[in-house]
Figure (cartoon, one colour):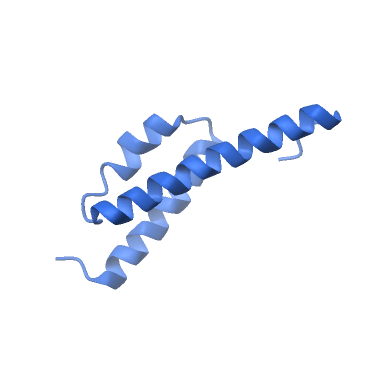
Length: 77
């Protein structure tokens, strides 16, 4: 059984992998299947929080891209 501290460490590792994968062009569905869904050591609530984090990261990047296009500024990432 994983301790709370071990699960917190695992959640942080998965969170970092989520960012990396999304930055490399992975879809939210791929992240869900490959990272979040396979983290069986985490509770359902912890996996749900990671999914929400991934979803918000996707949408914040999309909103930033729309804003850059609206004001005519190139990609600054």
